[in-house]
Image 1 (spheres, each protein chain N blue to C red):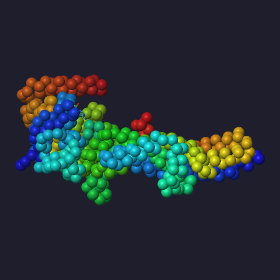
Image 2 (image 1 turned 120 degrees about the vertical axis):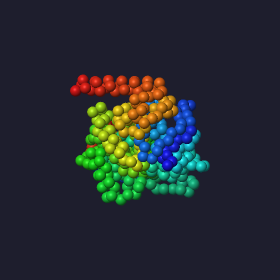
Image 3 (image 1 turned 180 degrees about the vertical axis):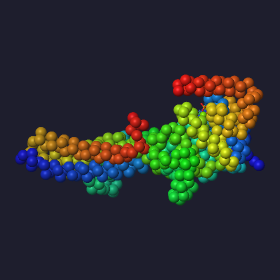
Image 4 (image 1 turned 30 degrees about the vertical axis):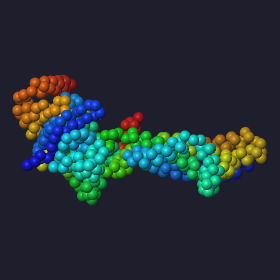
Length: 267
Length: 221
Ligand SMILES: Nc1ncnc2c1ncn2[C@@H]1O[C@H](COP(=O)(O)OP(=O)(O)OP(=O)(O)O)[C@@H](O)[C@H]1O
Ligand SMILES: [Mg+2]
């Protein structure tokens, strides 16, 4: 079966800075892939390109066999708005800073896109939204506004909101990095449940190594716009091959150990 | 004549002032949204037209604009009565300043909100009207309040194209009675009271918009 996501020699520049240089990367249908790597290595850029939040300059990118660039397409995205619309209908994204709409209740945050974009009728959209909010453990908060929720609750709403659009590929960009440590668990719990969905393809950028090990089919170490090393999680973490991977893992695991230690002391 | 006798003509003038001010604020607000949105549009023609309009009206004195519409325009065969001219000119001026307010508030909506909207596949116009605008409008209110007051004060100039507004009536009363002190004190008071009402209305609208937990004050201060 052909991959659902295929980057072939993709080059992405911000002005003079080349972030991705002939980048190659494939993701199978239903695969759960974690991207890890140092700050500035281009992890977010990969997700943002997939979400059409960033254009890329050269190479081929396909989702489910559809190319992001259209032949003769114009503008930075080299594609028409209609084409981008079609591409985005396959993809959803969960952001580090949640980005809920502050002027809408939790329920409307989840209902709005299915009604406005998928033309679902409001009643049906609301019952599906209620179901999704139950799944993320927030059925009692549906009439609250985002400002009345904790970060962890907001992120769970954001996950429900993304799922309401029935994406085939769901992107998570450091979904727990903006959260207080004691709220991380509830969000990871929801993502862990999602990881059991066979059809859903997941691409996750995270610094939670234990979690990555638990939910991913594959872990990729990213450095300077390249995948330096990738493997299934057990092998990846127990026996990393590249020196840079080892260096990164020991630094980040050390940090997290310290974090946990200081939390334990604080309690 | 006592000051009580000054009141009826002054009140009649005040009515005209309020009428001109309120209508030009309302029309100006519509123009402000139209031009402000056009300025943020990616269509260069729309944005260009809005730019020229805004620069022209912000960059020239109101008095000259009034004279131009009142005396110069009829020379090419287009003429309006004084009241229409006054309302039209003030609307265009208020709209030009208001457009900058609308544009600024739209640009101040966090970029992350637009990215979330894009990730949910909302169309551009849906994002404008349902995501950006509801958040931006609240931020516009204080500046709109200032523009409304400015508009009220600017209406005094329409007396110069022979509209019988508050200032015009004050001038005629003074010419008849030569009692400058009383007449102008009452006139100042009249403008002040109208301004106060406008400020209260704007505050009221802002409070209405801000009410509820969606926009807690703390998030904006
Ligand atoms: N809009 C932009 N304009 C210019 N440079 C950018 C832009 N966005 C990202 N970059 C640069 O591209 C590089 C990759 O950024 P990216 O955000 O993808 O890194 P990352 O791996 O997600 O890092 P982090 O772990 O800090 O989130 C960085 O050097 C960054 O400074
Ligand atoms: Mg990042």
